[in-house]
Image 1 (cartoon, rainbow, N blue to C red):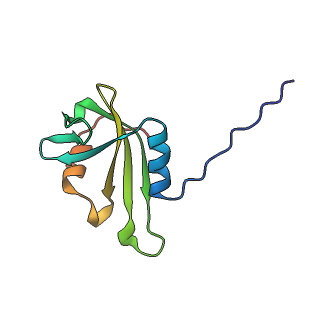
Image 2 (image 1 turned 30 degrees about the vertical axis):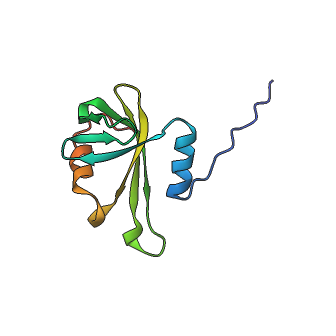
Length: 109
């Protein structure tokens, strides 16, 4: 019987840690939600909800202050561009992000 060493799990406790990890795996673009769609800050191309998929998302809650809550989306576009979008969570969310994400059909956890 062959022994297989288990893969070590990486404990990701902060938004910065996950952003660094995603960046290292190719999610290098930063996206911004606008009234025209999702704007790539790297290429200046705008994508519509049917042109993106959320490969994963992460929620963060402030330990001492609920106002510190945020959500991070790992996104891939139809042309293969990968990047991230960060939004506040709850009452501090950006309505343009919320309005865009509610229209995205392909969201994975």
